[in-house]
Length: 166
Image: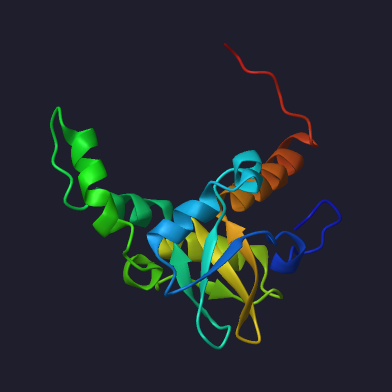
């Protein structure tokens, strides 16, 4: 519940800014998107993968990109050189081959507690908010943390954060 006692719906807190990709995009193209100046300012975006009919099919997570880029890289003093040698092959991998297809989804009309349960059950950083088969937003673990903090601090202290006792 928010400060007015109303239950919080996902549509009211969801992230509406994210990057949409197709399964056929290569890591080379993804890296190009991520070096865009808008992302420098805002940080790494959520990368939502959309199918040929515009439907949600999964997400490309940073850890998956990193794993794909490190495939074939030899550890040791020459690891940077090995990364550069492996890059041409690794950069041609497609989003569809390395994305996570097991991303939970909820409706924009779902309530906050449903999102808390999803994040815990799926052990993920984000939930796709889907309306009529299309992504309309995302709920990140950070958004949920902020909501939990606001709710608990508000309920326990009247909105005032007590000083630490160091």
